[in-house]
Image (cartoon, rainbow, N blue to C red):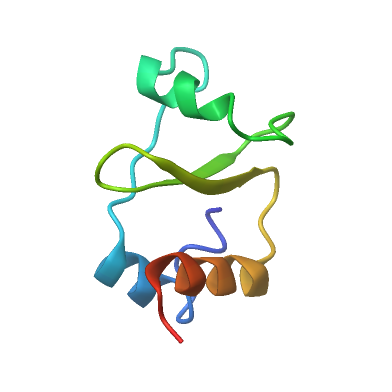
Length: 81
């Protein structure tokens, strides 16, 4: 994610529409564990989860992120056409 987040097609969307949080994989918070169980492919780090403001799991994935797919996912989740 370190090489994906700063990209010009990713960073502005993250900044405008999302609150990004990080959790320690060795000592995750209960809320993170709750939603991690909703990921079908939660076998490798990092996990990326999209949770709405009411705490509802929207979607997510595990493992390396393809920058183009990640940008498209951000736009879809944010409702950007």
